[in-house]
Every structure is written in structure tokens, then in C-alpha cells.
Length: 141
Image (tube, rainbow, N blue to C red; front, top):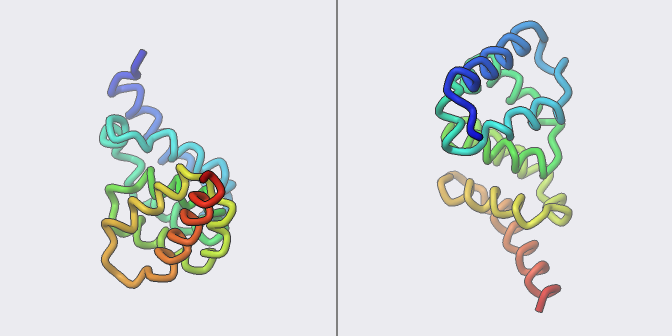
């Protein structure tokens, strides 16, 4: 059973209203990331224009500083089509690159996919990602 366009539009409007009613930082990072990750699928994200509103993006950018690697990976999936958010999320990873060691394989894949379409100096993130993938590979062989 797939939601229709109207139901998704309403969910987006409610998200935008929530963000408008709160100051950045008043919505818990894990709650915001969880909701946005629900909208990550390409067949859904285009039907929720509110996820790209200035108000919602302001909350997303504010929460990046407190995100775990897993949460950044979820935001990279949710906003893979928004270069500015993708860039900000990857920059956040440069300060927590050592935490890639606790990332799951799907989270590492999300980071890797974002790195493929990012052309600025993300060498430290790419190196951390590669090191973690090598560790995972050597543990499974």
C-alpha cells in the first residue's frame, strides 16, 4: 500500500509547520533525522516539497553539529538531491571521521555515494571511509 501524493504533501506541510513553530535546536536531532529519513526514498522525496523549504533546511543545518555518523548518513540519503545539504553533511563528517569506525555498512555506503558526487577536498573522509571498508573486508575474509 503506497501513500498518495496528498498524504505525503500533508506530512511535508506538518513537518514545515513544526519547524516554523520551533527555533533551530528545539527539535531533537534524532527526531528530525528520523522523520527526514522516512522521506529519503527517491519515489517519495519529490512528492514532499516542504522537506526542501528554507525553514526545514535551517533546522537540518543546525542539527548537523550534533549528529552521529549514522545520523549524517541518513541525512545524506534524505538530501542526496540537494548539493548544499550534502556538502554541509560531508563537511560535518570531517570533524567526526574517526567515528566512521562505528558506522554500519549501509551508513558507509551512503557516505561513499555522497562522496562520488562531491568534488571538493574530502580526502580525510574518503580515507576514513576506505580504511573502515578495508577493516570490514578483512574481518569477513
